[in-house]
Image 1 (cartoon, one colour):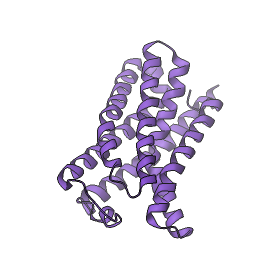
Image 2 (image 1 turned 90 degrees about the vertical axis):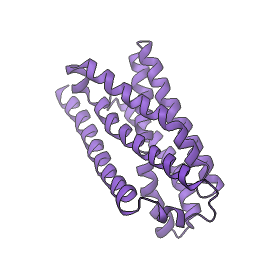
Image 3 (image 1 turned 135 degrees about the horizontal axis):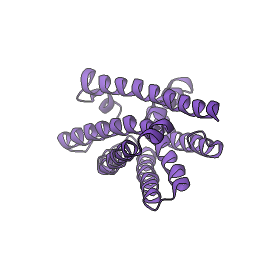
Image 4 (image 1 turned 135 degrees about the vertical axis):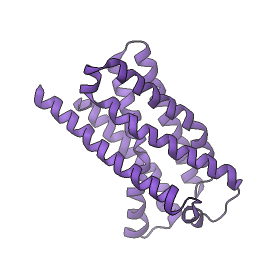
Length: 209
C-alpha cells in the first residue's frame, strides 16, 4: 500500500514538474520575449478580431490556465488531502473557479484560431474542460467521492492539453511536413484524444485515486 501511494505521488510530482517547466516557458514566451504575440499572429492568414480585446482575452486565458496548472497537481496529491482536507477543498475551489472564469476568454480566443477545424477543436476542448470540471465539482458536493475523482482526473488531464498541442504541432508541421493550419488542427484534436485517453488509463488503474 505504501509503495502504491508513493508511486501515485511520484506520478503527480512528475506532472507538477512538467507543469512548472511549461509555465516558465509560457510566461517567458508570452509575457517577455513576445508580449504582443507577433509570432502567433504571423501564422494567421487573416485576423479580424479587435487587437486590444484579443490581447486582453488571450492574456487572461493564459494567466487563468497557469492558476489551473498550479492548483491541479496539488489537488491530486493524496498526502495533502489526508493531512489537510480544508487546504484540499480551498485549492479545489480555486482550481474550479479558474477554469469557470477561463471559459469566456477561451471561447473568445478560439474563434480566431487558424482554420475552421482548429476553431471547432478549441471550442470542443473548452466545453469538455468546463464540463468535466463542473461534473467533478457537482459530485463532490453530493459526497460522491469516486465519481468526483474520475471527473476531476479527466479535467486535470485536459488542463495539460495546451502542452500536448505544442508537442504534437512541430511533429505534424516539421516531421510530417503539414501546413501550420493543418498541423495545428490535428494537434488540437489529437491532444483531446490523447489526454482523455491517458485520463481513462489513470482512472482504471487508480493511479491518482
